[in-house]
Every structure is written in C-alpha cells, then in structure tokens.
Image (cartoon, rainbow, N blue to C red; front, side, top):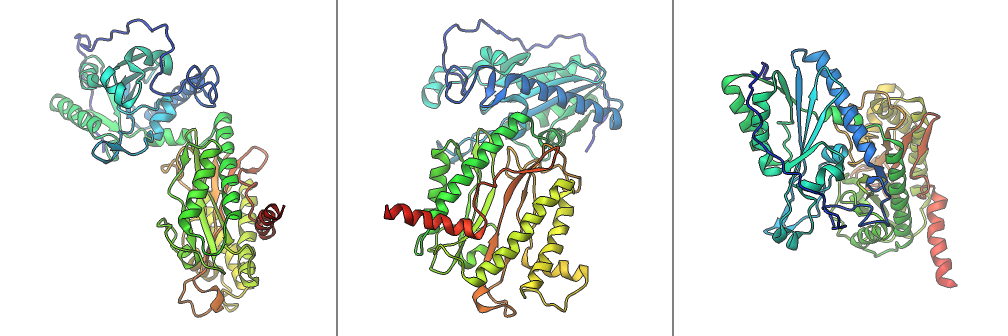
Length: 500
C-alpha cells in the first residue's frame, strides 16, 4: 500500500530535546554484555560477541545505500527517508513471569542492541551519502533495574551502539511529529503488515493518520531490504555460525550415543539441550523434533513425550543458538544402536541423495531448483530399492511419486533465524556467503500396503548446514555422524568406555 505526497516544510524546530549529560566514569553494567563486563566472551571493539562495532556501522551504511537505490528505481518523488524498526517486546507466560527474551533479528542486525522497548530510527536523504541513526531506549530507573537488571540508558546508548543520538522511548511520537514538520518530501519505511511491537505500531498508525489529514505520504516495509543484506553472511557471522554448528553437532552425537530401547523422547530432548548449553550455546534455536518410530512421519512433531521401543528409529531435528546465530541439524538413528538390513537400505538411499544435493550446491542453483533435483534423485533411488514401482518412467511421474514420500522443501536459508530471511525468494541462485540447509526425507505411511511391513510407519530425514563459498561449499555440520557405520560406532564407543 502506498500513500504519496510531500510534507510541507516548516521552520518550527523539533521540540524533542536531548540531555546527553556526561558519560559516567565507572564501569557499571549496561543493558547487555560488553567487553568490560564479559571479557570471557567479548573482545575490545566488539558490540556483540564476535562482531565489531564497525560491522554494525557498515551494515547501516549498506542498508542506506540499498534503500536509496530502490527508491531511485520506484519512488522517485521521495527526497528523504524515515526508517522505523522496533525491538521485540517482552513476552510473558503469565502475569509477571516472562519468556526468555529473543530480540527482533532485523533490529538486532542493524543495531546490536539486545534490549526491549527500543526503536531504531534512521534519517536517510535521497541525494546524499550521509544518514543519521537515532535510537529510542528505556531511561535508567533504579526501581525497575532492581527487579529486572541494568539498562544502558539514554546517556550511554550513543557511545555503546555508535549512533548519532538517543532519546527516551516515550518521546518517539514527539520526534516523529517534529520530523514531519521540518522535513519535506519524506517517505516512511515501516512494516505495517507485520507489526513487531503493538505500542510502537499504534504510534506509527496515529502518525500516518495525523499526517494524512493535511498531506498524503508514502510508506513501505524495510524488511525485504534488511533480509537481502542478512542473507549474505560476513566472515564474522560465518565464524559464529560455524561454532553454532559445531556445538549442536557434538550435542547430537552425545545424544545418539546415550540412546537405548525404552528411553523417552523427552530424555533425548533434555540431553541435546543440556550438552548444547554446556558447550556455550545460550539455548536451543527452536523446539526440537524428537520422534521415535512412526511419529517421525509428523514433520513438526514437538510433543516429545513417548517411549522409543526396541527396533525403532529416532528422528531428531535440533539446533542451537550461539550469540544470536542458529544451527539446524537432523539425524536419524536406530535406538538399539544398529540398523536392520531394511532400515539401512532405505537410509543409505536417502543419504546418497543428500550427499549429491550438497555437491550440487557448488554449481549455485536456486533452492527451488535443488528441490526439483531432490525429487528426481530420490525417485531414482526409491525405485531402485522397490519403494516406487519400476513401471513409473516419466520424469514428471517420478517426481510426483517421490514427493509423496517427501512432501516438504529440501532447503531454506539459515542465519540469525532458523528459517532465515523469509523475504528472500528461493528461486534465486545461491551465492557465496549464503548458508542453507539440505534436508531430504523419506516418510512411509503406516497404511502403505505397497511396501515391506517392516518399513510401514518409518520416517527419516538427514539435514546439514552448508555455507556457499567462492570455491565450492563447506558443510558446517559434517562433523556430526550421519553415515551408518559412524552412527553405529558411537554406540560401540559408549560400550567400550563402560567396559574400561
């Protein structure tokens, strides 16, 4: 939706005032970790663990350039741009009992700020390389900080986040009103369709309504522009993602080795969670799938409450979040520690497809093209082992038959979010710096009378996280056992340790 016109200029100065005060000389705790408070995870010059202050400054500059370019193509009447991106609000389980706080990824990507009740505002002239960055944050409050912990505050935010100005978040509406009076021909970049913070959304809705009474204006969501930047990981982001993948891989291997017939899905959930956190992850990146037996055919099974019986496979889809970057791994293994011959035959067919798809990524296909390749490769392998009739020969019929066994996409982007940068289409070629998953599966319905009875109700999936590089690909989760002999050896190693 667009509202187009120019705001009339006005000589009235903005009424919002800023008392920057003097930065305190002490080393008090701020609203998030700093090199002074957390030297065990942060180095000098870093705003987030592993990411420098200068990288955040550069991200905002790239964003401003991208925005100007799009505006020059589609919104040529805009002379200035006003960008508003809010932080995520705190969510509560009940009354004053909060959920673990998770920052809005777009806001975090541009600011490095981990605090709630914050808003990023950027002033971007169309015909200038300059831009201004303003943040609206919570003021310091001794009573609130007693209960909820320290805040960075208005005075120290500019220095911590390397921004131009900071104001109390309560002044956002005043600032917007003043901006409308003093800035001619501006365009608002704010996502009205998927509001993050309802309080901020109400302020922006009223702002647009008030301005439209005397003048019209234009607005667009900035999310797609941010996602187009986020989808390419910087060297610093690649290091963090590599570590996230290493932690999750080791945790899953430990979980595999701890399995035995009669164990509960919940215990395996707790095991992967525990070992991820003990090795540096803040928490799991999502509710994991821990599915024994036929429950593996429920793609997003998250109840994790059943007992896994002897002879059944376990499908675990789990990843962790390490300093705001996610991993996403799926492994399938026999709870007894050894595949049956038929289980192994189907598993090896799936594995051969997954390995081939990872190799294909070095040719830079689109993710949608990779999905088409999966259907073709999977169909051939399933026909070879008798799960698809040998009478099916046409390419289209083979793809449809394979899709019946794997009714989900084979890949998505990965990064700060598990299903990262959702506004970047999967029909574009992958390029160096992208991280994607590769996750084919085989799901055999319990009532499928065309397959061996032993295979009915069996589900399996194999998923790795792959970085596209200039020279090819890097499987960042390759250290997590997935070949049948590797998986069975994890059990043998556990037994050997017990006997020593």
